[in-house]
Length: 409
Image 1 (tube, helix red, strand yellow):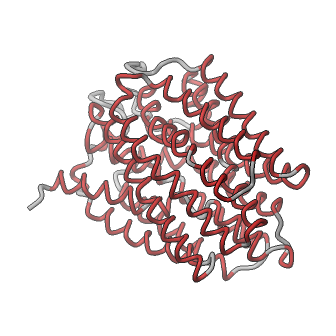
Image 2 (cartoon, rainbow, N blue to C red):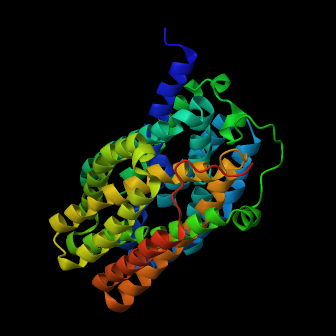
């Protein structure tokens, strides 16, 4: 019989795999569904679809810091994950049943608010189970299973959408949500040290979690890192949805959904070894060189997209996302843990930085949508690449190497 602690680690692997499709919401599929399926006859364009994603993104980013603070405060972290998964799924499966800009926006905003719980809760549970010494490797493993789950779900979406249409994505999300609930329940709550899960270490500190403003004001290094994450997501968030809209114009909605699923699968497959390498090597190589490489890949990706509009080319360029976003996803909680070690502010700091980066993601889709309407897809991609280049320079100048850094408690 598997020991309870080992069983919890296996369940954590499974949770990261099956929750992958749920935690990211509808993503680029939303833009395809609104623009290509409902289309102008229902009042939808690239700009209005981008507006929905922007409003939902703003709702989600407002929830990020409170979600992190909530995870710091409560011991019922498993219940938080289950409630969030149910809310995201209900918002997705109800989309084909609602009409109008307002109702679609409300549903997607609810999903974005609920999804704010996922990242801090999973990171906290991981830290609480394995402790700080093994946290770097555990995060790399989490990300690897997350990307593997994304690849499988996207592959299923692509195959099934070709036969049943884009709406099949909604039902796949419901299935994976049910599986994530099962995996969450297998985790033994006694295996989680909730003091360690807050980043408190051995210190006895019962101070309440800080607000977003307090966290950024009192930790300049965290504020600078938040600024870098803002620029990364201002560039990155709109790239794949914009590719989806371009493919929908070229090949139609059904084929576009399958092709965008292929884009996701390709990138996620690349992310698996990237996440494992980052988890295994970042203590030796350092955080800063790897994060600069992520910005470089993002810049290159934005510059390559406009060269050709053939689906095969767009799919090939999307593989670079596996390197850039793979590094970012693995390093994000590791750098936050570096900057907050011993303070008891790990999860609220995650929420604070995620709020700022979420603002970049929310603005990204509206920025790209407006540029597509005004100047075309090529101009949108070049603009996003320029933002990534600015982020690379900012990170190189403003962010110190955090490996081995201890924040004052």
